[in-house]
Structures are given as structure tokens and as C-alpha cells.
Image (cartoon, rainbow, N blue to C red):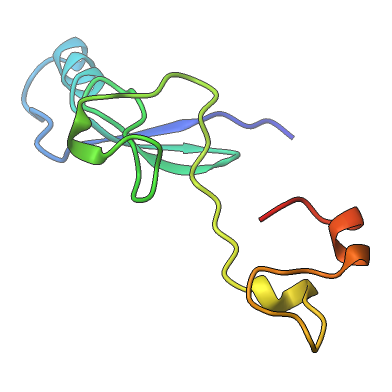
Length: 101
């Protein structure tokens, strides 16, 4: 199977301009990157933007390079907890099989 990343550009592409100018516009007016790992918001020049709950806030000015993935959240913390477990405490068996929360 062949797979390529897809970049989405802003919609104001100058449709009456030559193809080279249209492509130049698209290279500098990106909004989204679609990859095998997921879909990411990007800066106009294509660098991934921080998402909600990321290590940098959206307005910090920090942009990430290649290799950064979206923040993962586990919402069902009680999945591995036994009946007598308190919040955020797990059985010895669970701790040996599961990554720390």
C-alpha cells in the first residue's frame, strides 16, 4: 500500500493566478497535516502547533518539529482498579503489567 501525507491549505487560493503562484500560496498558507499517525493543526508554514493539554500552550510561540505526536489521554482510570481500590491506587498485579498513570 502506498501512503503519502496530505497538507490542507487555506481556501483563498488565487484561482486565476499561474499554477506556480497557486502552489507558492499553498506552501505558505497551510492549516492541517493528515498523516498515518493522525491529523494535526499546523502553522501557515507547516510546523505542528501545540494542542490543548500539550507541554506548551497554544499562545506560547513554541512550535514542534517532526516526530511529535498528539497528547494521549486515558479517561477510564478505573479500568484496571480492583473493587477495593481508591482513586489512583492500583493492585500489585496491575502495577506489574501496566504503565504508571
